[in-house]
Length: 246
Image (cartoon, rainbow, N blue to C red; front, side):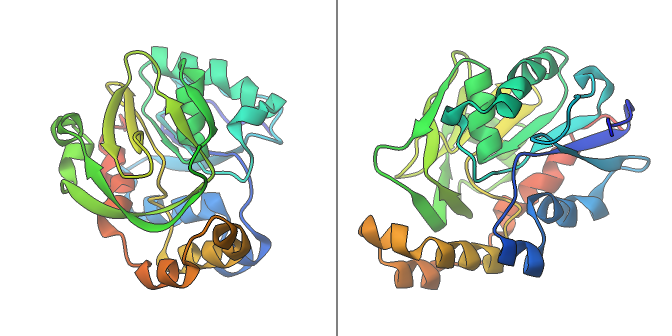
């Protein structure tokens, strides 16, 4: 069923499903976002889920209060039809200055939609809880400037934004990925890390990726030991709500 067109609606664009055991224990990707956002929504605001791979129609972006794009086990470079269909929609949203926050797949999709390049990282997968550092531009940014210069975040990705779109601003980076966070317009951001993840979800993902990480030469036990709470990264979600017109 198409979403209702309503300016008091914050849409969570679901771009895939988590592992079955993660869903059973912690909830799917959209549920993780709902858990963080629901209690902090502005008065009169509501959350709606748009299942992008299954939804045949998209609401007019200008009728929405804001857009959050989830992660996915899909790959942006595969250019699946449902994913490609989101690109012009996101371009319209950017033109209309609709607040957007893309996460992981959403980060890579936004960068690709706006003229950048997203593909497999030449150094392989990044997984676990890792430090992220703001750039000078990030420290001055209206959203990211609320975070400390260095903070920890949960990460799990094989693809990255390899080339940022022309005009996009790099707000955060780390040793693995130059483009941990990007800004495309006054209220449009994306992040490679997962602010919606809990430590338990991060550990579950490391369990699923053990073999692949070992083949990459990673110390999986050390990655498990380094998993910790990421309150600063998580607060990014509720800070984002301040940029939505209620």
